[in-house]
Image 1 (cartoon, rainbow, N blue to C red):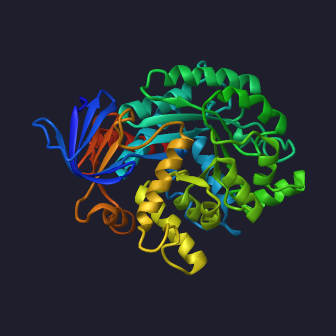
Image 2 (cartoon, rainbow, N blue to C red):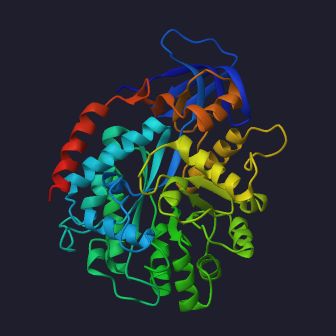
Image 3 (cartoon, one colour):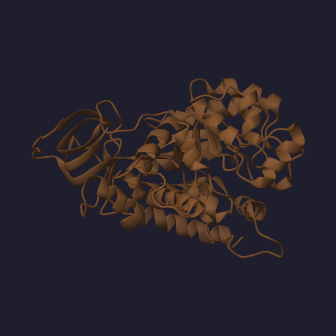
Length: 447
């Protein structure tokens, strides 16, 4: 798909708010100029209502292939930990070709939902036996290939995973495809940067998996590999994780991390569900992003993030699709708000004040936090990536965002880096990618 040179919208959400009759001039993959009160030119693409594309700050793409496979109750109480066993069995079957096909399907669904960049928290590094591929970055290259084939922006976050639990617990056999050590990880990062180098706008960060999977010494050793790039970590997702961290260190996970690592705005703490008031305040003041994944957190029974207190302390947050059990930007934001309503037994918790739109507050916060977490800038302004989403025009301005999040939940068109990827709500390559995905899934599940 060739890049367009201009897009005209009857209304668009710019950094300073809504404006009418907006013409966006593109120079390749970026926005060159934004004109307000402008007339369309003959060759311009047309839209009724434009908003910036959103960053999906946390994805495990391969898990799209196991969506719905963990919804049968076991002999004991189900939890994240029993779900994880299903995930281990599934991931043990995947070849590099399988992985790429599943990732491409996930990324198409992200674009159709209004996500224009994905943070791929990527921990599937080794072959089925746990051995290294001849190219240490083979699977990371498959991530980059999937992203390039469907046209989504990529922030690649290779995962460091070395132990099976707090205090150096040995990893289990099912974790063999994930494991690393600092030397291997340094070489892996080099290969990830080489693979990502062929993808315009790609960014490479690092991702220590969690405090239970990385020792303090290992964490200190790998942090310099991030350079100026983002640092992501799972933290405080489960009550058991908090209890195990207390038993190991005498501190809760977020408390320990803030006391022992240089957490700053480059960092994204994924989930951070179970925090004390003191931890919530300290995380907000660190400038790090809280990476919230409401659909997955609900699916796994994790709990509810303390959104109101975090926001009131000036905290920054974004959203991600995590396990990809359902890929839906509107539903991530809706469920984030609805969880708070159930917790508080109140309405419009995320709103910034009387008469203010809840949908707008959620969208603005996730836009800012998601871009920060993935090392980029979002917004319809000169110099930014030409990542644009057209919503249905049944409502105007903030009412349209409220309708999108709480009612309709659909996008019309999506341009990513100046190329139209979604038209009429469907990705232009959906048929071929979905056929490959379904063929792959049948093969994998028949093993």
